[in-house]
Image (cartoon, rainbow, N blue to C red; front, side, top):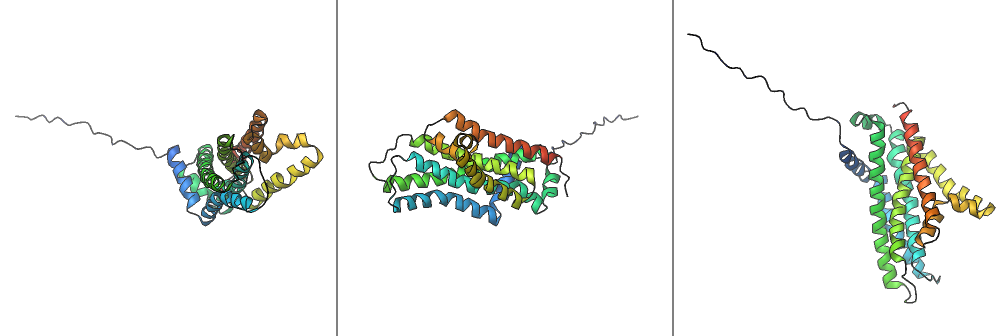
Length: 252
């Protein structure tokens, strides 16, 4: 008598995708930034820049009619520090020769740049929001009762948006140059030096290219569309340059 055995077909085990998802990469980039000494110091400086500046403003005898201007300055001060954070997130990979490890985890360079951009923008917005909140409290307690709070919400939101925008500019320029000292030097010389030289020559041209002035104008409700175009132009141009140039760069 023969017995027939039914043999079940072997079941192929499910294979989990090895490609890290974008949220995972964003989380890794956030942790990577905040676990380095330079990243932590920049984050701390970004949070403290606003309240320290507002405290010094109140300690001086300089009068200001509205809080919109000081709130915009908080966004600019924090944003200038976040430029460096953005640069370090991208150019730092090449300067410290860790780009190869990063691209082994995620070979698609566009996804890596996107993750860095999202992570740095989120950090920039969060740090600026903390700085803005502390600055708001200081002015609420110490500011003269005659100071107007009209437009305070718009100015505060503008500051938070400026923090994210400046961080993205740093990401793009860092990716484009792949050199931390060159990116930082070029950015600060352009924003703090070259644009001001242009302003002495032609105010209208300077207003069209100055990201700091764009933040001030938008916070005050002046030339909002032009201000958005100026700041958005900086963000798009820097990220596009970073994406194009980083794709062509050999990993060493």
